[in-house]
Picture 1 (cartoon, rainbow, N blue to C red):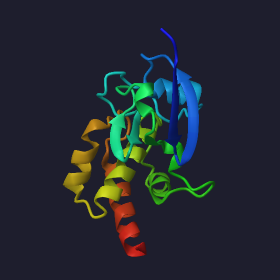
Picture 2: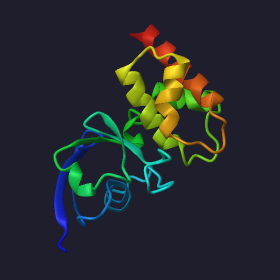
Picture 3: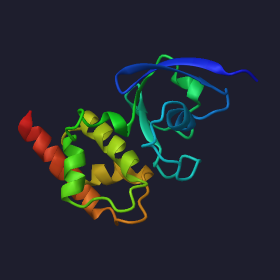
Length: 159
């Protein structure tokens, strides 16, 4: 089977790579583009550690083929910060100590950023529902939820 040439936009930059037709987007991001923020936690779309956005929609990159990225806009955790300036979500995760081992953190950051872009004023229940596909085995979620809620409040005040 021959490789497929893919041209896509990742975090605002046009990129090209070759991938096996059976290769996941997760593997292409990690192995071809050296974007190692998304993690493989399960390989079955059950944990959310590999969450990225594709054309603004939250997806598990372990369930998407790399070839499907052709012509799409991909957003990864590496694109959340503005250069050296952390995104408010990243700042709050540090402030609230909303991370421990870090395996789930990139996926949760991508997911919560997508949520806040879609709904800038979520209830705690909505945040918990939105993050139901992102498993964290370390934090117990409370610090994560508080960090997201506080970020949402700060972003609303700033706009």
